[in-house]
Image 1 (cartoon, one colour):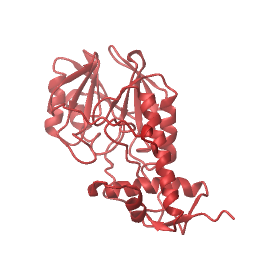
Image 2 (tube, helix red, strand yellow):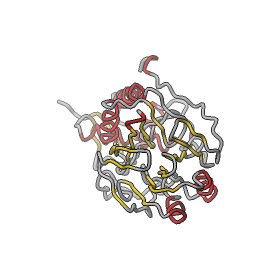
Image 3 (cartoon, one colour):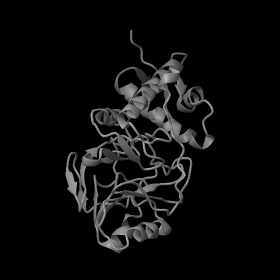
Length: 308
């Protein structure tokens, strides 16, 4: 990857937990106090519109955050609760907000895997899935959701999870992109919940849209969204090339590949990096470029396919 292709990350996000920030007209955001290497400074929930509003991504099982959101909409009516995806830092607080407001819950559906689970795979306790979540209304791609003074187009963006959605407010030239695109870091794609093939297709989908301003599930807003997405696409292609370069030196397991291509990574993220490598390998195996014995799983050993 050339220097000009480096992702222009922005880690400047001074928002404090519980503070209501109207970042553009009709969009308020509230940060949950759940910082971690995976969530940055915490999960960002959004309040859309005025008067009759939607709350997007109520956040983790956190009573203080639910109270902050409800306080922010005091005197208004919450008509919609929108959920981008079913990770435990995004959807569990839905039940608190629904109990307090009676609002209808909209999402793609319950948590699910992106492909059938292999018999040799164990259910990872680290997947972060919220398996209790079930929306009132399931949203298909391209559905239009309308509220008091807002209208959102549903964009199916699988990859980070199989049920990931984004929501485009076309009149305001913006998209709520959840964890599909983030300004502070790349997204984790961890099979079988996530899929690199789906993730890349969803990135490509965004490059074909005109909206410029992206609001993410963590960290600051992203300006010039489609341009930024092209950086992410080039980064993933470069990551694939690095994996193939390492396998060109001989077969390797995933921890070996991670050590070779993730230089200076935070040790707390090495497991997640391994799953992102697996997502690339799964794609490469399906394309006949890389081979492994048995199913492409996290504990496998990988080599370049014999192309003779």
